[in-house]
Amino acid sequence: MKKFLAILLISVLMLSVLSGCAATGNAAGGNVIKIGVFEPVTGENGGGGFQEVLGMRYANSKVNTVDIGGKTYTVELVEVDNKSDKTEAVTAAQSLMSSKVSVVLGSYGSGVSIAAGEIFKENKVAAIGASCTNPQVTLGNDFYFRVCFLDPFQGTVMANYAMESGAKTAAVVTQLGDDYSSGLGNFFLKAFEEKGGTIVAQEQYQTNQTDFKAILTNIKAANPDIIFAPSSIATAPLMIKQARELGITAPIAAGDTWENTSIIDNAGADAEGVTLSTFFDENDTSNVIAADFVKGFKEYLKANPDSLSKNGGEGVAAVSALGYDAYMVALEAIKAAGSTDTAKIRDALAKVSYAGVTGAVTFDENGDANKDMAYIKTIKDGKFQFLKTVKVG
Image (cartoon, rainbow, N blue to C red):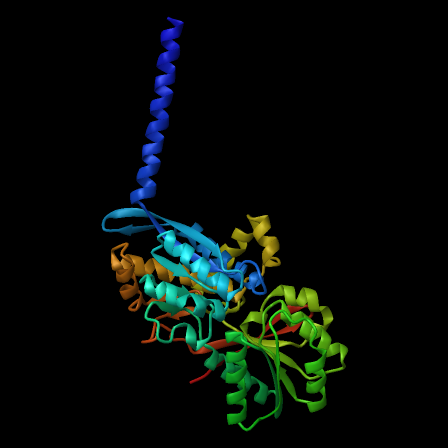
């Protein structure tokens, strides 16, 4: 009798396991849609990339299902690290294609986005950039979209701000071979000159360079009213500190990448007075959707100590808000397509209209968001502080 009961118990257990496997197989095979997260979480832009990923993860925690053709699909994030490197970006993009994702989000960093763009296009998988601002990301690529403003706009915003602050001369410092840095620097230069300003120095540095004393010495001799130095997060504090050590007192300005607390942590008091343009401000209460996002995102961070630490505290970075919007726009496209077919999702994406955290999102013929406003912030008392909003056009 005992032997019979033992055999019966084993049989029941085996049936339970097999039933569980079958159920899991069903869910994984037929009711999951994968969204690729193509971001740097290591390398020179790893800090900003991780903040962008946090926005996407938070969005997924809020809405992790989507209805397609009468069926409810679980939305699964497939994350890859492009390591802030163009070669690694291609490998990471190919990995996402092998994982059969239906749409891709990212990347922080225009260079890696441009490098991977052809992979997405060839596989007919739409990508939605959150903060990649260089025009080349979407130009000539029908499968790349983005929810942020572009560098020609951002460069003009900062040139306008410089002139309004009384600057008549400027120095521009950019990273050789970096699409974001060189692109934004050139757009600032062009806009500044068009408004009657004079560029008294143009300097370039190499990727991974850490000693900027030589180029900063040249800038000091030119005595500009302002220095515009768009760069990676890792480079920023080094350049700021070395400029102040050389006795350069001119205001230092940059673009959206400099909105990261690690710059303040590493540059310390030397970061005081730095100005930058960005996409979002957590204290702007004019947008109810944004206010709800800020409250929920802070709670999400506090519930995840590791994420809170890597984020640098409870501050809400603009790229986190953009990451959230990119995810929600992807869901809107999937719902509108009514299909998991990647080409249909791309076609639906072109027609999406979404009221987002960072403002309304619609796309022009290039796949670029129709946005015309930027936030200007400064570093004061060891914190990012809002100065003004600026519209161009």
